[in-house]
Length: 470
Image (cartoon, rainbow, N blue to C red; front, top):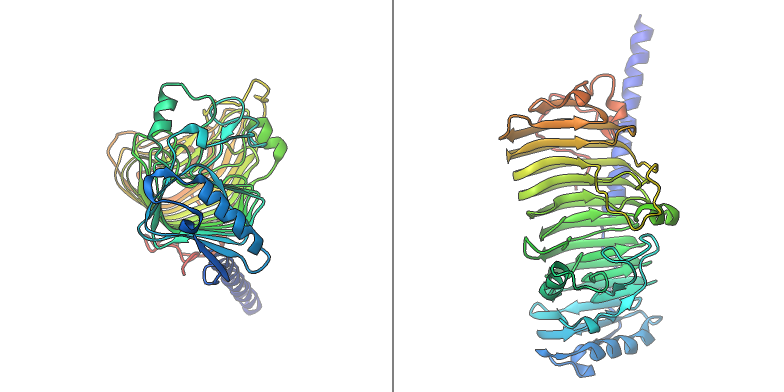
C-alpha cells in the first residue's frame, strides 16, 4: 500500500513538472514571437521625403516622390538598410512599393493620405489562394502601401497617421460601380520579419492591414478607425501567415476587428498555406456589423494554434465568431481564447456555418471543414443578448468545443442555441446547451485544447489564465 501511494505521488509530481515546463515553453515562445527584434536598430542611411520633391499640403500628389525615394534607398538594402522619414504634413499619394531592410517612419504630425482617384491604385493579379478578387472576378486594386517578397520591413513612427480616405470606395461599392475589388490600406505578400507599430490607420477602402503568405509579423500599439457603417473595413487580417503577434491595439471599424484567413474554397485548398501560430493580446475595440475576433470565412488552407487573451469588446455585434460553409474544406483546430470581457455585445460566441459566398461554380460542396479543439475560458459579459449561437454543419461534427468558467449576463430567454456540435463545459452561466453539457472534469479535460497544461482547480473562477502571463 505504501509503495502504491509513493508511485501515485511520484506520478502526480511528474505531471506537475511536465505541466510547468510546458507552460514555460509556450511562455518563452510567445514572448519571443512578440519581441521586436528590429525596432532598436538604427538604419545607417536615412532620407526625408521632402528631399524628393514631396509637398505636404494635402493636395499635391506625391506618388512619384515616394517611389523615387524608395528606389534610391534600395541601393542601401545590402548596406544595413535605410529609413524614409515622413515629417509633419499631409502627404497625398497613390500606391507605392516598399523594399527590404526599410523603415518607413512617420512623424507624430505626419498624415499619409490615399488618393481618391482609383487610377492611382494599380490593378494587380488576384491572390492564388482566392482565385479571383474577393468582391469581383478578375484582378484587384493594389494597396496604398504594398510590398512583396520582402525581408525586414518596419512601418512605424511617433503615432503618425495613414488615412486611406476610403469613403469614395465605399460609395462605389454601395452603388455597385466598382470594376475591381477594393484595395487594402497596407498589404505585404510573401514577406518575413514585418513590424507595424505606433501608428494610427484611418478609413481603409477595404481590409486595413493584410499580411498574406507572410512569416514573423508583429503588429503592436496601433489604432485602427473607420466609421461603424463602412463596408468590410476589417482591422487586421492575417491570411495564410504564420508566427503573427498582434498586441496592444485599439480597433473600431465597420467589420471584423481581426479576421484570420487562409484562402477561399478550392483555391485555398489547392494553395494549402495555413495560418498558424497567431497570438492576440490586449485587444480593445468595437463594431456594429462584424465581430471582435473572427476565423474565416475564407479558411480553406487551414487555421491552427491561435492564442488570444486579455480581450475587451464593447457595444458590438459579435464577440468571437467562426465563419465557414460547405465547400470551404480546410480546418480550424487548436484555438485557445481566454480572459475575455464583453459589454453590450449582441452574441458572445457565434459559429456561423452558412457563409455561402463562393469564388465560382467549381467548388466542391462535399468538401467539409474540420472544426475541433476550440477552448473558451474565463469569459465574462454584461448586457449580452445571446450567449452562444453555435451552428455546425449537418453530417460534419464540430467536436471538442470546450467552455470553462464563463459567466454572462444574458437579456434573452434562450441564451444558447446549438446544433451539430459536440463538446464539454464546466462553470458556465447561464447553463449551456445540451451538446455541451457534459462536464470537462474529470474525464474530458484532455480533449480540450491546452487545458491539461493548467492543472487548475475548476473552482478557481475569474482569476485569469497564467498561460500567457508576461
